[in-house]
Structure formats: C-alpha cells, structure tokens
Image: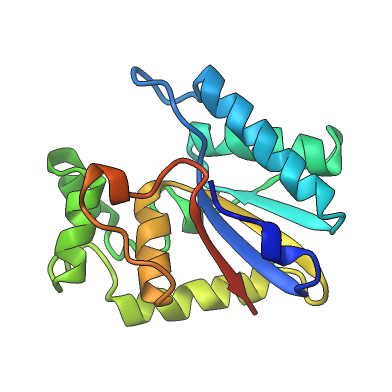
Amino acid sequence: MISLNQLQNSGNICIFIRHGEKNLDGYDLSSEGKKQSLEFAEKLYLLNKEINVFSSPEQRCIETATIINNRVNGESSNISLSSALGKPGIQVKNEIEYAKLTDTMRCRDIFSEWKRGKCCEAMHRPEIVKERVISFFEKTSFKNDGITLYISQSGTVACTGYALNLTDYKNVDHEWVDYLDGYIFKL
C-alpha cells in the first residue's frame, strides 16, 4: 500500500494506484481487498483534504474507488470513470493489437517488452505516455489544494509510473505492482 505520510501540507497531488486485491476466480474484490481499500480510505480521510476519485471502468477498480470515495466523500458522492485508466488505458495506441498481447502474455511481460522498445504497434512509447498522462492529470486534478486519486490496473500503473520516471516495477513476483500501490505525482 502506498504511503500517504508526506501529503498533509503538500498542495495539489495526484495519487495513481492499483485496485484492491481481487478474487482469484473473478473480477470482483476479495474480502481482503475490500478491507484494505477501507483502511486506505481511512488514511486519506484523516488527511482532511478535498479528494476527487477517478476509476478505470474495470469492475475491481470501480469497487475499490467506490469503497474509498464513500468513506472520504460520503455515499451520496460520485466517482468519475475514465478509459485513460483502463479499458484500454492511456498507454494503449491500438486496442486490437493490445488485445492480442493481453490474450497471450501476462501484463508484467508486456511491460517488460514495452520498456525494451517492443509492442510499438499496440502501445505508445514512454515519452508519449508521459505527455498523455501529464495532460490527463492537468485536465482532471484540482487546480489548488487537493488530492485526486486515480485507480487503475497494474499495467497502467507500471507504464505511467515508468514514463514519469517515478517507478520501475520489475517482472518478478515480489517487485510487481502490489494492490493499492502506485505513485504520487505533484503538479
């Protein structure tokens, strides 16, 4: 889980994380994923800052976003959905080619190949992903003091974090994007 300790007096912040733990046999969150999402929401709530929540249209992301948003903003508030965060994701250039990759490879393997300059028919180069994600942050985040939380899948977290030079996840089990992990970007 990403650390929020340094965010108390930090201005306009973008937090980009992976969804909570999912069930092994489906797309919904596991009971542990729901619990961890609520714990993360409590930490955000204690920051006493205005928070907007964006989610990928993927079910597990929506579920994570809803749990967090309900705690920090109340159950009558809404989350915003964006295909930049998933289905397909901001890093995807050609959905058909990308679908061929995801049908045959694990996300972390695609990421490793992408970092080596492969997958160029399916995915944007890192410098293009960087431009696109910064533009997305500028359009969707607070203009003053606040936190904008973006919930996505591991591949989008890994690609955008790498493109921004904030993180470089490895293609091994203990160094891949963990649930509710990601990065913090200050505009």
